[in-house]
Length: 492
Image (cartoon, rainbow, N blue to C red; front, side, top):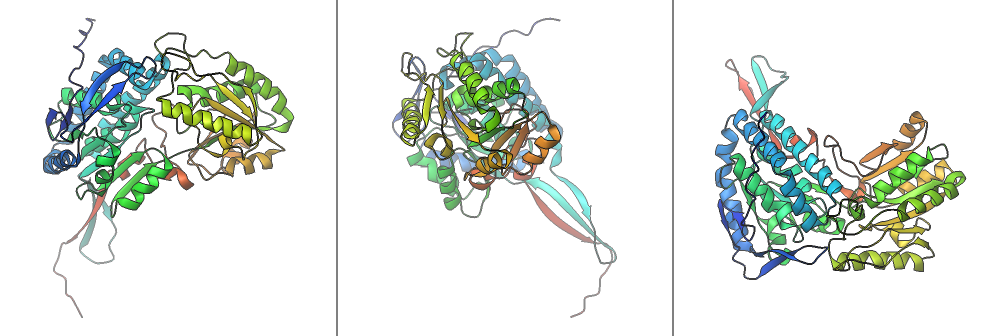
């Protein structure tokens, strides 16, 4: 089989696609996009302002009706082509994730695999709009139908930690289901979070105006993204405080919010400790802990606590950290200096709360943003156990027994992801069903790489579900139509 020629690399990331035209924003000022490990400037982008955003929204509203009327096969074909382009450009995208997001090669591979899977899945979902199902009627000669249609324009606001996937898991199904999208990526990852994806869809044949990417400061366009009259749905992935602000400002719009987490991973007394330690290490330190579903707390039954701590600390101390481009690196840099400071302040706060810091290290690397693995032994009330850390930090908490472990796991305002380890899967299932979380994994990590999982949370961790076919309900609406097939006499 002949090999596909390597495509020319994408260029022009000093501009953004706004209302069908690649150009700089008109707000004045620019954003320097830098490598978190080296500090090198990757690109500089003229920022978008409220007028640019308004233009993008209005172009999306104009383009969307015709797009939703296109045959499902045409929309699906564009999605499948986009998935193939992502495969052809995997090495190019890997390089951007390493340089812009500080991702190791293995971490980048996970994200690209998820992004491709979501895009392929979106192709299968394209035929789910402009269809109808019947509904019963109590009246003679009357037929009821419920049509599923596109909602219109979707606003997507995505974070920096898994930028391609966490943008595309909303963008791909929204487009496939006949909507237009205006995407605001995080300022730390404008290329991987939006501009690269826009190039992919453009190459795949997406008509102009259906996907705009606005790179701008939160102070200039943050409120307008959610308050604008055009979008019908706001899809946001990010912190709980920002999510609460969006909910207060969005007005009468549908919200899909995946917010913060404080993932508990419970190790029961009959757990396979080798398996539990490996899962806890992965869940805690994958992508430097910068994952909303990261294992924030490891709650361990008292009878196996000492043995678990010994193995976990040894495993964390053996992890290799440094340049994300080096093949052996397991932990790369934290995204920016402010985040490094935030993580270290939380570690110091936990020590002040009485926790024991048993593994630590000073930040290293050219920018000082590579933070070695940190391990604390403390109660459920220390800072790093109480708050979402978003860094390479583990807090190990001793539980008296199974009921105490459940109490500790649920003693948080968050409810995103969770896990439990036990040799008895029936026991694990019973325990999982009592955990207050959007998802619980038995004998697996809280961090997950399965594109079919409907991500979403309970309590302060959000509203709605992303992933699988659950996302269809977020980006479509239902239209009830009744048909009277014979004359009907009305009596008042």
